[in-house]
Length: 208
Image (tube, rainbow, N blue to C red; front, side, top):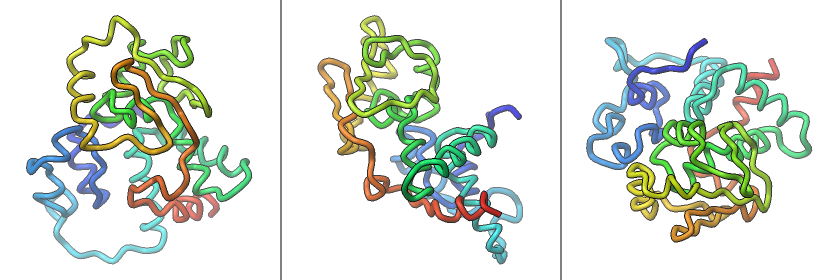
């Protein structure tokens, strides 16, 4: 199945949450979710009763779309989280946060995760000095992510770094804007992940 390439604002409305898929627009008055906070389509404003399975499915779809994953990729993360010690739902979110494209976004080098994925694919970043162009690459504690020298004048990256104060850099990451470098100080704790996600519903869905 190919990646979704339609209007991303419809996704936020479908999942009833602001997923920040469109960069700066999501922080402005132009945000479609703020203007029309109901599902898209001609029946979007109808009130419908959702089953327990429906709630679980919508939560899974929301997280998949938030991180830009396909079903097979997402299922592999769930299976990996189940095989780790600790709470499966928290393990899943930590794995997703450790993806290189997410780290690039969290550090402020990109305005959205989709943009971050493109930048990683086009070889703009180094991890511990080594070229890595795999968005799903899992960073480890102590790793350093650096923007390569030739990319430091790229307009989209500089514009994103200018607005990083509005989004903020998570406490488990450290950004050096002058050196175009970020490092992983710790793995995120559940309380560090502030998106409205009910990960237990996802675990319940896959355990059916």
